[in-house]
Structure formats: C-alpha cells, structure tokens
Image (cartoon, rainbow, N blue to C red; front, side, top):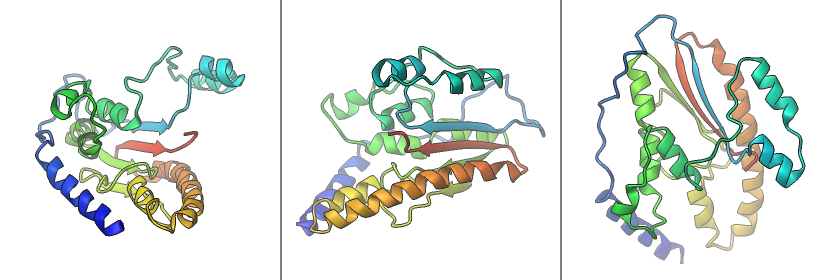
Length: 223
C-alpha cells in the first residue's frame, strides 16, 4: 500500500512540474525604501487561526481587549475588522508574501483543484523576501511544521524547523496509511508542541543579530 502511494506521489510531482508558474528574480521597485545602514527589522509573525477581538468575544466569549490595548499602547496598528483573503493558509500566505491576489490559479489548475504545489512554491520563493534581500535584508524563515515537502526556502539565509521527529503534514499523512498511524499521532502531538515553543524561543533570540532582518515566522498555534 505504501509503495503504491509513493508511486502515485512521484507521478503527481512530475505532473506538477508542467504547471508551476514561471518565477523571476526581478524584485518590485520602490522609491520609498532606500538602501541604508539603519534598516529596521521586519517581523511577519503568523499565529495561525488567531481570530480578531470581536470574533473571539462572539464565538468563545473571550475578552481579548487587554492584549489589544497593550499592542496599541506600544504603537501598533490593530486592524479591528480584518479578514483573510482566502480560507486556506497556504493560499493566504502565497498571496501576501507575493503581494498579489492569486485567483488566477483557478485558471491554471481548475476551480475544483486541491493541488498545493504551486502555492507552496510561491511561499518558498516569495517576492517579498527577494525584494527585501535586494535592499540589504537577511531573510529568516521560522517554520512551524505546517509546510509541505521541500518548502525550505532557497532564499532564506536562516531557516529553522525544530521538529524532533521530522514530521511534516506530508509525512504525517503518509504514515496515516500505515499500521504505525496510532504511534505517529501521539508523536505528532509532542512534535507540534516542541515546534511551537521553539518558534517563540527563536524569535526571542533574533535581536542579537546585527544585520537587518526580514523574519517570516509561522506559528501553528492556536490552530
């Protein structure tokens, strides 16, 4: 059963090579961002499925105002009526990290497609990191274990993925088709906890680096 699944996966990977979008190393231009020795660090932290304040109150009867008030007191802008562009994480991240809507993928893959290959590739080699690297930034990618096979970005100078057992969504799904699934399910819970805590620790340690950084951190919590 596993051998058949692996063969099917291999066939799928070959087929997806023919539909991958063309990529370019050209970065967007901007007259506002200048090369400087004092570039500020940029942190893009995804707390996956963290709902906005009014939704937390309406659905879970949880008052998150203390945290929101803390952020505003520190000068953060809080979008109180924000909405995700897409219902699925990989589509939202592929969109935001490339500064574009990606509705056009339905023309390439079909409206019923659940193929994640192109969105994953768009995350892996995204335009935001390429643009900021051209301006002198180092790209730091803190993975939360959500990403599929091969998602490690070729653009990132620093990549962290503190998976104790090496499970990704891909490998976990593969093990679900074997008698080992019950053991893997228990190990995955431990692995997820390790990755979440490590992600926060990694963020806390980054300020010691001197060079300007663009940090993309995907924390799989409270998902």
